[in-house]
Structures are given as structure tokens and as C-alpha cells.
Image (tube, rainbow, N blue to C red; front, side, top):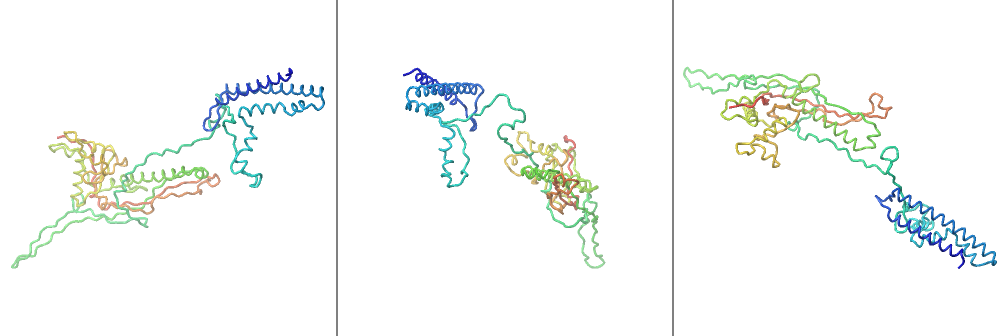
Length: 447
């Protein structure tokens, strides 16, 4: 074996060694979410080996050219020279890579199912699905990840995952739930408010037994006259509304955002409605709320001070219900602040047993003295309302709460902006104010 042939063999062995080293480096690459991640050290070692491989390839190519020249000088048409000429340095590198199990990108592509699906052009020029070179025992892809991120937002790498918006919890119990509602097409509700027979109502009930005439000179018995007071009142329909501005493209591209805006606007109307039903002062565009209506009864917690055992807040609610009963109206509900309801639920007897909260804690309906309870921040802490919501007052819906959208506002049209409007129209008529009792938790009574 000549010197040149031995040298070529030696270089080919070195080439295989370098290729084996690079294969070992490639085997140590990590795969994260389908992507090959290469550290800076791994990339540096891999690139260094590739430079050595290219240098060895150049040496092999030079020696082969020398062997060709040597063959031509010794024998014309020498088959050995032709053989070395055909086997170029690139072929030597390819054979070495093939021996190690690597395939070229072109070979992998032509052997892929995606390319074969074309059937030599019979199925057109479009593959069923795009072909991608992935990492396997026969090939690898490289993606460099460095410790220093590029300038810009973190979104420069990969895709962005957007979590849904967390909406605030909503108040589930509403004062409206205690009222029977009616619909109306009028702008003003006119009605007579009957103040009743009680002293709270301003009238008198003089009904009495009347003696019959027995004959002779006995006069016919005179029937007594009762006093009933009627007052003409009006309950105008009021409008509750608010709106939010939004860009048309934002709502078109983010359906969830549109839903949140709609729901929050509607929820805002419900909060205002509860406040108006209870506390509206009747001026301007406000409803005349139950607590602001002349003629409702009142009961103070401290009135239980003369009793042998001091009243708790639940006792005060029951005594207020009695006042409604005495006005010939059966109370149908209680509205109070959550802090006051907490005091009632947590009330215990001398043995530490709960007085009210047992049924509620077990999933029962919120009730006290057989009446449903609406605990809401719409009523001030230290105040409660007991009454016959079903017959003492009436709620009228002129237009139920709805959402409307328009771009006809200011210059919104040219700015591609829209208005999302939530609106409702309703009226409240408190026809029998004595059917309601305002409870004042002014001070705990002491025996």
C-alpha cells in the first residue's frame, strides 16, 4: 500500500471519529415541546468538529487528486485512477455519515409519506400536509438558545398563551325577588294609597255590635262610622342606565370581552335597582323607595329593654313582624345588611347551640321566623326592613333591562368606536306603607 493510500485511510478514520463525536453531541441534545434545544457549549463543540471535518475532507480531496495524477502518469486509462476520481471527498463524507445512520435532508424528503402522496405528480403539486424534518435516530434539527434574550417583549419567543379574564363574583340575592312584578305601557302609574284603620295609618276602625229594635219605644240602633284615609299618589316610570365605550375591532376579535361588558353593565343596573327600591328619595329621576315612604312603621331594638331577658336582633325582627300583622298584613320577607344577618346566624344559647343558623348551615333556605331573608349591602348596616312585599307595594316594569349598541355618538363613527348601553325603565308604588316596618338596631337592650 502506497503512502498516499495509507494517508487517505488514516484521514478517513479521523473523519469517522469526528463524525462519531458529533453524533454523541447530537444525542445529548434536549427536546422541549417538540423543539431541539442546544446550549452554547454544545453548539461550540459541534461547530469545532464540523470545521475539522471540512478540513479533513479538503485533505482527502487533495490526496485523491494526487493519486489521479499519479495514475495518469503511470498508465493510461488506469481503472484505479477512474475509481478514485469517481469517489470524491463529498462521497467519502456521505458514506461515513451513512455508516453512522445519518440521512441527508433530500433523502429524508423523498422517502417521506408526504412526498410519496404526490405519486409522481398524479395528485397535483400540493402535498396533503407539509413535511417537516424532525429529530430521530437518523437526523436532528438544531435550535440555539442563549442566556441573553433579544430586545423586545417576551412574546418574541414562541407563542402567547392568554388566560381567560377572571370576573368578580356577583350578588345573587336581590330585593326585587320579594316583589311580584307587573308590566306596564304607561309613563306614570296613578293610584290611591289607603292608610288603613290603625293609628299608624291615620284612620280608625269603629266597627261594633249594634242592638236591634225590640218594639215599643226602643229606637233603631245607630251604626258607627269608621274612618278610612285615601291619598292620591303617582309613581312615575324612571330610567336606570349606564354605558361603556369600546372599539369595534376589540369586541369583534374578543367575544369574551364583549360578553363581560354586557354582563357587567347589566349587573350594575341590578345593584342600582336594589338601592333605588330601598333608598330612593323620589326627587329628580329617583324612585320613591320603601324606606323613604311616609307612613311606614318603625321599631327600635332598644325597645326590648323592659323585658326580663334582653332581646337579640332576631327578636327585634320578630317584634317588627308583629306590627305588620297588627296592620292586617302578613309579612313576606326581611331585608337586612350582611353584617346584621351574620349576628343573627351566629347567635347561640347558653349551651352554645345556634339559634337560627342550623337549617341554613345544612343548605336550607335563608329564613327567619318563617320569612325569607335577603341580605344585601344595598341597605345600611344597623337597619332592616320587614314587610308584606307582595301586597304592600308593587313593582312595574316599563322596559326590562336590555343591552343596545350604537356608533352614533359624538365622533365614534369615524373612530370606529361604539357605545354599549344598558338601560331599564321601572316604577315602584308603595300602596300600603303601614305594611312595612323599619327596624333600627340602635343599641342592644339590657334587662
